[in-house]
Image (tube, rainbow, N blue to C red; front, top):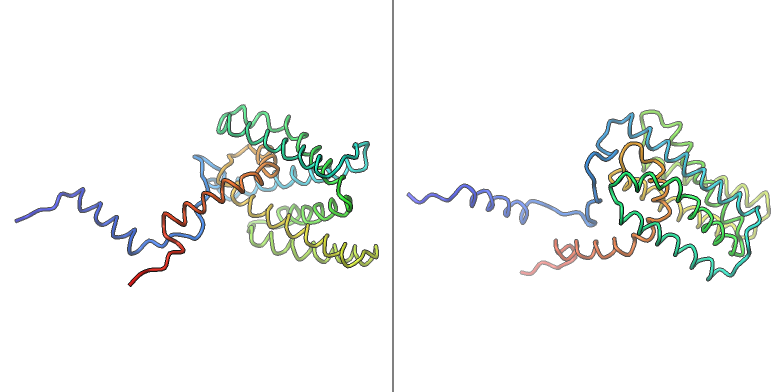
Length: 250
């Protein structure tokens, strides 16, 4: 009787499963590190979320406060270049010391850099204070949700409830301050775009940060927009590997 080697049989079954049973997602799985906060119990995860939300809201307050300070007025293109340079520097620091204690220890010292650069960029915009408030309001409601959710925290719930509450408050501001229709839509658009990015990135951060790295996670919110380009290439490679958009023949 002819016997197949056990290893060959296992590989054959695995291949059959991947080809006929496994259905890949449309986007690649998030990058994970060992012992991430996502692997901890609910109490630890919620504590991490609340501390990070608090730190992040403090950075938004700092940005708004700097707009009332003696910041130099420079053209938007120049301010944008400074902001991109700071974010690139922060990304290099994270890449060089990723996973090492020094990278986490430097977070608190580096945090003033993106705060100042973002305030400088926002101040160069025509509706600077309106943009800043449009970031602060959803940041406030995201933090309040984390504080009041109890044992029912959900990123989807945080996004939807914060979005609705922010829209209502900003609409109230627009009416009370008699903003133009364009200013009202700008405020709502900035708020929605920010909240969409923030909640999505926060959910991904849970797989990339460990307990006690709340300040580093707060810094990640500033530098993660630069990951968009690398993530786009990763998604394309994922689509090609699993033939997500290919039309089956036959």
